[in-house]
Length: 109
Image: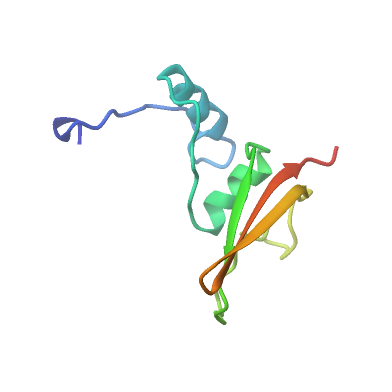
């Protein structure tokens, strides 16, 4: 990958054995990255929310019925293991058949 021009980062693991997200963001910041869009599956999105590393949310809602795909990864108990943020300054706009929602997470202490 380095031969193709990629920069590899060697980072510590978090308590869950995955890449430490605070360490990842610090390494990116040290390289001059000031803004990052995270688009991932339920586990990635949940991990950033759980660590309170989200400054803004953009959610696209499409008028389609899907089953078996969760937006967030539940804990083994089936319930969230952390408090979800309130959505402040919410705004939305239609985009074709979809609805796009912007909001700022307000972390409950």
